[in-house]
Length: 211
Image (cartoon, rainbow, N blue to C red):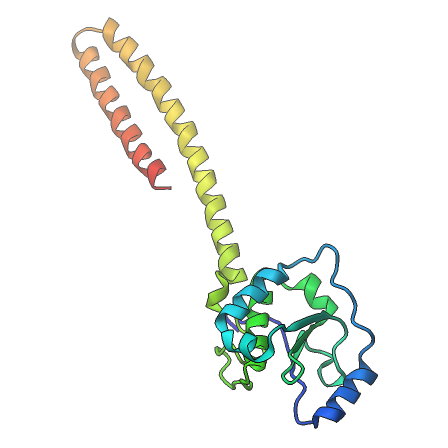
């Protein structure tokens, strides 16, 4: 699936408005309040979605966002949107299992429905039924994990270089002390050793600054 997120969504459609509202009233209990400590930043996700589809605010004014069980048509989805009543309902489980990137992608998708867009058959399109990662939402979960691994490896390398530089500095000081006491060929050998140590320290310093 590449960067596609395992978030399914649904949109009540194919029913008359009165029948749809009756179905929702029967199949969906009273809307549950959002969890006190939600795992995702719903406000940030909604803000991005609003920025992508400003026409929704012009048409709806205020979009009502609910956390609660979805309609029977979309019981296995992550969220559903109601075009005529300007509502988005999010399944409670989505609030605790989705990442910020997934929630953002999902909300942009739902706002797309509120703007009148239908599902796309292209799995890479943000309106596909299985919502792929939306680049407007920043790095995907896979990219974020890869960055974390990369930064952890860089931190380990920086630590290793710092330890090696400390070792080389001690060796260089000892070499300089020995060189001052030495004479003849030994003094020359120690001078060459000092140069090698300095070159190694310079290379490591360049690498350290690049990390």
